Figure: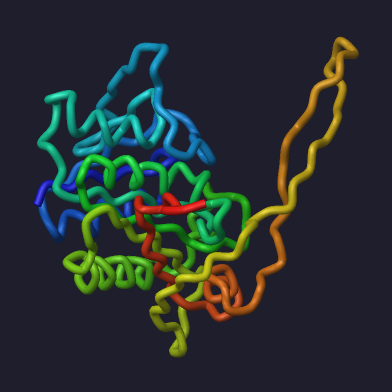
Length: 243
């Protein structure tokens, strides 16, 4: 297979792990956003030029969004068109409906699925905000094993118009198992808007969020509390057939 690896965070430890695993399954390369692009969903860059840079062997940066990276791999003629898109590993889980709709990591997979390409998004529940600290990525060997196992076991079960969102725990134990979740929690964060003042005395506002409490029997509870690997199958067919 030809495999595109992308994410919404740039060149992180999670990206390195995912690219390493992808190369076990085919001819893999990475196109990632040049800058942090979290929470951009399936947004596209339509009103400015796109520039591609070779960061290192098989790793390229694009001054766009995750979904741009997918379209670039498919239509720029600079790369072999992917048969599979892997997105992540995101530093922070993408459980809950709010993340499913807003995550740039999952947004890349929505774009791939729209284009008829199989896609899996990988995210990791985190206990720290500092993704630059390598120790905060937990047991990389366990992460690698989990990602490889999921691709092996579930890739051929992805149906048309469907993608997989995988949330990995930050700790693995003897009780960690794979759970298929059809019940995403509604909100991942509680919203806050903080008013501040710039050096010239003018007010500005900062949108932020604090983690929501996990609710039992949801995707968030399974990954955050039960420390399980959670797979949520997502489909493009979400239009209600009647009013």
